[in-house]
Image (cartoon, rainbow, N blue to C red; front, side, top):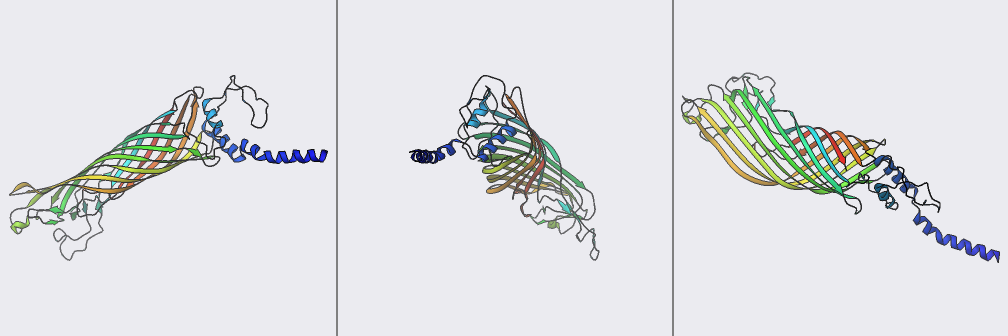
Length: 400
C-alpha cells in the first residue's frame, strides 16, 4: 500500500513540474530584471504599507511600497526582452530634451580656384610650375540646437518621439596669388565656358539646415548590461545653401568676341543657390552599455532613404571695360532624386533620479556624424558632392 502511495505521489510531482517551471522566472530573466532595476531605476523601494508575496513560497516579505515602474517590472517576469523605457514614480512618463550642438557642415566638390597648372599667360610656355593646391571655403564649426519630446505606451513598452534640429553653416576664403585658375568655369560673352587665369578671388558659402525626426521604437535589455532600441519612422528636412564667388582675371583676359583687343574682363561674379526639401523613410538602432548604475556608453546608427526636391538657381555676371556688367549665365531649374543618408553617434551618458524618484535626468556628451550622398546640385559640370556634417553634442533630457 505504501509503495502505491509513493508511486502516485511521485507521478503527481512529475506532472506538476511544468506548471512550477512556468510560474518561476528563469535565471536569465532574473538577471535581466535585476539589471534593469539597478541600471535604469536606481533605488526603487521606499518605506510604505503594501504587502506582496514571494514568488517561491507563501510567506510575506516586510511591507514595502511598490512604485509604478516596479509593477511594470513584475508584469514582465516572463518577457524575454523586458522594456526599459525610463519610468518614474507618480508621473506622466514623458521625456523632454534639449541639446547644444557644435557641428561642422561641409559640401564636397566646392573648390573655387586651383594652382599648379600652366595658364599660357602669367606662367609662360616652357616654364615649369610649382606644386599647386585646390582652394575651398574654410568650413567652420557653428552652434546649433536640438529639441525633443517623447513618451511611451503601455502596449509592450513602445515609445514615440519627435526631434527638431537647426544648424547654420558658413565658410569663406580669399586668395591673391598669381598663377591661379578658376575652378568653376566662367561663361564669357559669347557663351564659351572655360576656366580663366586670375590674380585674386574670394568665396562666401552659407547654409541653413532644418530637420525633424519622428520615431517609433522599443527599448529593451538584450543582456545583463546592454540595451537595444530599434526604431522606425520618417523625417523631413529643408536645407538651403548659397555660394558666392568673385574673380579678378589677369589684365590680359578679354572677351573672345573682340579677338583679344580692347575689351578686357575686369571682374566676374558667380552666384549659386540650392534649396532642398523632402521626406524620408528612416530606421536604425540605438545601443547603451551600462557599466555602472549611473554611467553608460551609447552608440547610435540610423539610415534614411530621402526623397528630395532640389531647386537650383545659378548666375554669372561679367564686367568689361567697354560693355560694363551683364549676365552671361542664368539657370533656374528643379530636379527630384533619392538621397541616401547615414547617421552615427558615440558618447557617454549619465543617468540619475531625484525628488523621490519622481524625476529622471539623463545627460549625454558625444560625437555625431551625418553624410548626405550626392547632395551638391548647384555646381554644374563639376560632378556631385556629399554633404558631410559632424561635431559635438551635449544633450540633457528630463522624464517627468
